[in-house]
Image 1: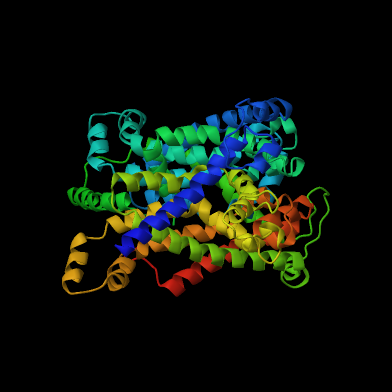
Image 2 (image 1 turned 45 degrees about the vertical axis):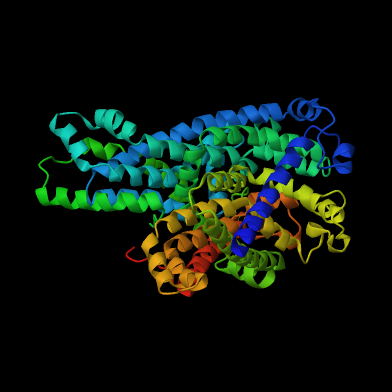
Length: 271
Length: 318
């Protein structure tokens, strides 16, 4: 009895600690600074989207949003495609070759992005990838390819080898087998990896901070970070930015929650 | 590689049997050489953009290159000596980082296990609460930083308003403004951010424990604590090793959260290794920044290794 009360107590308190701040941010994004400070928990007096208009138009978060959409929209499928090709080969090759390729690709998970950022910056400077969206896409693909190969290759290895062998006896080439057998059967793990990559790429801050100079090429997290200095305590504006930056991920979470948990947990279990 | 989530473990078993079976039959088909083309793009990208720059970091680390001029000198291990003995900014960031990792690893592991134990049953209410507790993980670090900046705001913030509302003005503080406490408050934020994610890892581990073990223990008259100590804890060891290792790397890299909550560059009491490396880089000391990033990599490896030794969490068989 006592245990059940304290169980409920802990869960209720933690639920409040998550719900209340998020509600305050949501309501606060429609308030003026004064209104927020006077009653942070109260409903907003009006739903006029003044703060959103200011951040999207006035602070140009609209173009940052578009940049984020472009970068994420390209880097997620490109990463998935390249990783699934590698994962497929790893699943079909045997012995040392399979092991060596998988090991080489997955080893990159052990290298934190801050470890090679200086040489990467120099390299990007030489090949013209600084201060443009292409550079961000390349950086995203590089940094998440190991984990994507880990998730997809790990899954494709569990598909029964007989499937592939049957195809190759029928004379079906490796490419057709990849397209018509391996990809469709791996759909659940591709979906989980896609969600995982989407969250990482959408929220990525280090690479934009390193590579982007022009305000017009900022992605959302970088644009938000620049608010930090400019609007120290203009919380309603910061909140409107937070809502805008979080909206796509939150909408996806509501509809695809199962894949989120699977994908982000698969990402977490990297060794 | 340790894949200890429930589903991965379940998939493992049939996999090894089919592998054994196909080996026995000495499959008649040969590997099509075209298959070697498939991993080429990935291998080329990793070699050129990840392996090469990482090796170059070692090369840069022994120079005083500033990133622009063609001329530079080889300085041997001077950069490393400087970091540990002459650069109080770096040693401060190192100390902060180790403290931060220790705090977050302990708090996050304990708390996420507690949440998982409370929500392990698949009841409807539990599923809803899991989804809620997982939610902060999907937000961007900068968003989380802004939310908590407001919670901690000494004048208008949520924490102080809430304390005032329930008559506990005495407990009001200045949080991030208080240099001796700031790091602890960011650690709280980090746990709020990711405990739900680790909870999911633990739930998968807990659900794989056979029910019968608890029933047998109960018949033997073991109390809840004894059951936890001799069944639950040893059985979730693989999950614990994932949670501890992941949380360690995550809190070493809490770069975005620190910059979002403390600004760029952060003040001394909130400077950690990754933010320090970035500041050194932004200061055009490329050689020195590379040396710092090698120390950073080494620290992650060292701490991860120490944890494995201390906790004896090396999972069986892998």
